[in-house]
Image (cartoon, rainbow, N blue to C red; front, side, top):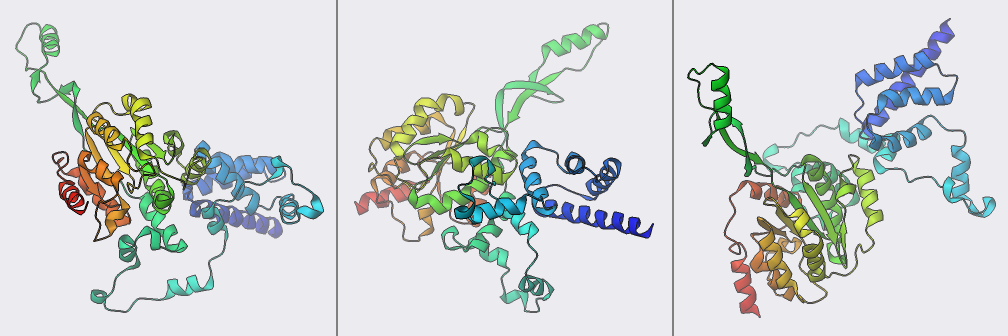
Length: 410
């Protein structure tokens, strides 16, 4: 009897540990789900592996996007008997021959690998240490990372910044639309509702019904440069765009280098690892050349009418270094500016204090933007969020000083 009880306790500990691994990997697994998993396993038993797996799967995951991560975690944690054989085939191709395409294992997500790996001794010692220095003369690591350039960060710092970027939000202001809704106080009398209330009241006097204009967030369209000079920044901004896409209802994202690629449906995946993997598979010109004018022309012809309605806001993320030397860029920028409510240009080159807009592409783009902002660290992304809360300045005023300096330099 004691051995049976000990076996049940060991199984409960393993299920609890498995739930902690899933939670560390990013799945929303709380104490209630752990208790439900224990009850489900007790109901189906552990004799059949598939029944045991189905019992855990039914209570520990909620969305279809979490299925791939759960399957990989289950295979690794509960030690599939065929896992070692498949790993040996990948490590020793000369002995086992070519591995069939169907048997190739999917790459393990980085967060799952970290969740399964035990913490290092140095990390445990660092967690036990207490800071005794004077706080007035020290800076926390988070404050340092907020002002550090993405291009100079290490792999560990980039991983930490990704988690911080995922929590950022872009507060789009609500703008009045043409449609109206019923309101307690408004700008116009709702005659239909007033007469309906008078008819039901038997002709007696009733208070007036009012209507006011409905307010809604405008659509957000993001055009992001993925050329070789924008590689590091574009990869980090994809995590920011994923968070913005899942926080707002009308966000469209298109990447451009030598061609234009719409990745909106890929970024709508809740799992950020799945979303980034799908984006990487869909884009074929990453870290290549740049044809800003041609790509903006394609956007104006194919996507402008579909995406830039109802006062859309456009985020243009690019360093302005065009391989075509600005050929036709001014014409396409003018059309883009006239099609949207607000055009904001984010340029990582603004991180330099001595920046001068000398390239032909930058000079062609500047007169048509409303705001000209840097994007190279976390502070610049927070500055972008503050910009949306401000009133729009007259078009071209934000870049007039830079444009005049470029003219004098030329």
